[in-house]
Length: 195
Image (cartoon, rainbow, N blue to C red):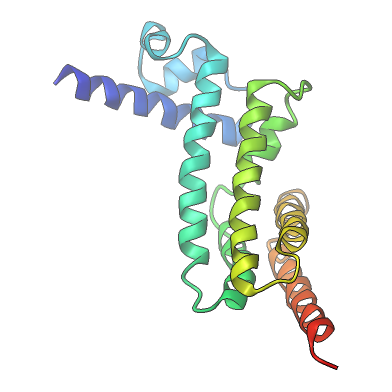
């Protein structure tokens, strides 16, 4: 029973940390705010995490797993490989339109750390690599001539759309990126057509 309570407490701490970091950033998320918002003691937090940095890294890793599972599940609902590539941006548009959208947690937190070897930056890098790997898989399914190159281009469009949607307050950034991908796929198809 104590293990269940312990896991619940740990999950509450991680949930609160993730929400606060996503809403206000790392610097604005102090231990006092975490304690107050989670309704746990400081001692409880330190029982599970050695320090604030460990807590932030754990919360970001958890977000990565959940976000990637959600994103890939939604994108994979499209019926064919080309539609899945376009659906990347349809799914993003839905996210951009959702209440509380504040951009990419991994781009945001990376912007708060200057050192590329910082554990927060390493989690962000791992997240982007997982996203790139997923998009590469979609490009392979599409039969792209150079799936790695196409996936890197799509990753730039994904992150660009996320950033524009946040900074400009314009969820149509996903629609614009989707239109670019549609054009790109049409051009690639015509380049590969027999002559």
